[in-house]
Image (cartoon, rainbow, N blue to C red; front, side, top):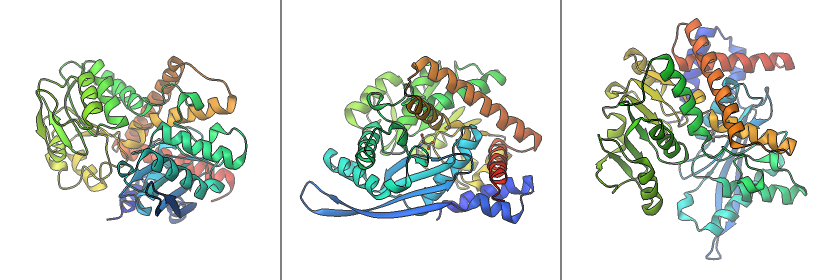
Length: 411
Ligand code: GLU
């Protein structure tokens, strides 16, 4: 199945409400540039292995394209294209001056040594360097990539160009021009939106149960933040499976356990649960924070949560959206809920361009303002169009992208 089919259906839904014509729809759905690169990496054994990589710059009407790089064995053109499209929508929803892009390498980084991972990261940049840059296209971390990988990539880019250009990549370590707050930003942004939603709906965190699928950067920080705010985190999972404890998991201890053993399984007093079981568990809030296509027409009918906060990109299919809507389950969509990551990436780029750096307090204050304003605008657009939040977000974003295209004379 091509994930991009989901994108087309999402655009069709919003487009029907907005009355988009064929020309507008085609402009919105066609990427500006798609790179497919194949490059050699010397393995520790001395042998050369070739890797397949992608970078898709979807739309740059609102600014340089922006989006992460994913290292995953299942990465393909259709996935990267969808993720690049969602970045375009996300950046427009957050109203930050960027277009959308995404990159990926078809690799399981867990199979590589640290030296091999470094060589792979550098070779990928060598293969795409002509097409990226602080005013063109700005990569960042995504699934299975991290600040160290961003550091190698930035270093490689600077060596090729000659000079310091920290604004080429975000999500860097602080020492190399990274922003304070970038590590927690995706989760923190989602948490700010949830806090606003809770305020509006008189939800008291105490006694509210949360299940989180995925315990990577987004999922584990979300667990930590919500635990500190008094929510009952009853279940979490990672790629090896999940755990549940109806009394609530001790998240700081669980984070230590995961760091030590590499998995959430085996945590004291918890019962094992499958990833599917986690999605259908008796919980108030469900946070998908892993990969695409997790909530589908097959399991959407069994979801018991009242609220879904999407920290992953594309976790819910368009068919599932309709089922959830009929069941009166509110979905805070990915393009809003996880926009905190790219928002602090934007702050990092601004700081790099200035050469002047902010405190974490300043970053988080600015992040909250962006997230709350995006949430209000999405909600307003959805209610004006008598539809659910994802359609609201798409309408708002497509409108902004098309307006920029019009002003440029492209339509
Ligand atoms: N990979 C993240 C996302 O999907 C962050 C992108 C960025 O910071 O540019 O939003």
